Image (cartoon, rainbow, N blue to C red; front, top):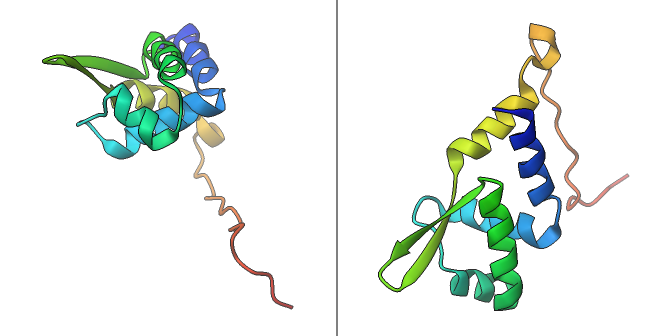
Length: 111
């Protein structure tokens, strides 16, 4: 994957609404969702959703498929995995990486 492709993908995901749209499509899986379904689920106006889907599509992260009169958008998992692979390539200089566990923000702290 080219560095320019990574920059486009990360730039597209660097907006709250686009990140939410992409995550919703990842959760849905290959079946995808229509723009209307995404608007309803994420409470984003249709004109705004259209802009965000265009940005994600231009970055190669989502792809529209025509199904009759509808467009169905789905996450492009191969591209997503390519971005992740690029970011983690040569991780820890070939040595075994120690998994990092993030603290859970929802857990109550007891002393």
